[in-house]
Amino acid sequence: MKETQSRKVPPMETTAAGIKTSYEDFEPYCKWQTEEGCDSLQLHLQDYKKEQLKVQLKSGILVITGERPINNNLLSRFRKEIKVSKHCKTSEIRAKFSSRGVLTISLPKITPSKDLGSNGDSTSFNACLPSIYLVGRESSSSRPRLYAKLAGQVAVMALAMAFGAFVYKYCYCVHVQC
Image (cartoon, rainbow, N blue to C red; front, side, top):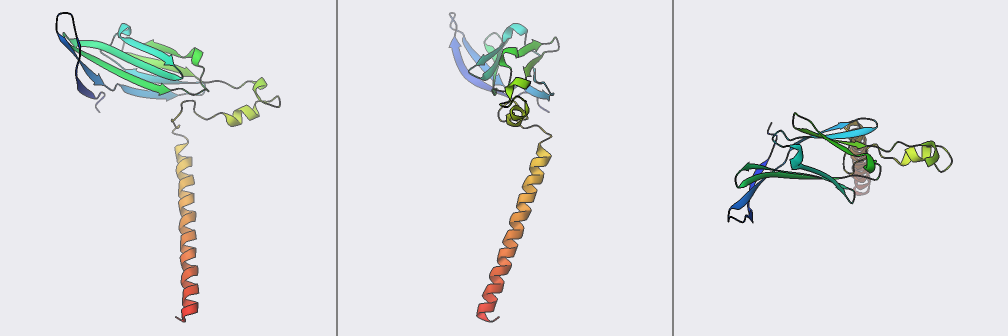
């Protein structure tokens, strides 16, 4: 499995000495780990150093960037953007870079408390919380339910169409004297 996707980008900068700097963009290998109170994103960046990475939260978007030299006039870089929903404790997002070259970003979830419900209990808050806190992600445990529901809907539609075809043919044959 190829971990990165590379493409050369035309020269972007010219240094004072007149040397053009080129960039090689790539997509780092990423792995999500979902737990009850916190999800983690691991980015595999073996050739990067901590000083070459930046993790920022801008207007609800987690922006992860990195840039490192490959040779004198070629730089490798990447940029990942992840939309974080309002159900994430943004003030507690943490990033840790390991000696193995893995950047782990922890995204803690808001845990409901007793005073969040409208009637004094947490059930109404729990009902409105999504099972995931990142917009656009599904947990793998919800997929079988989604597929089962879809299969049920398809079966009902097929039966309805078959019944409609039978009724049409029966009515048509009765009026035409088949």
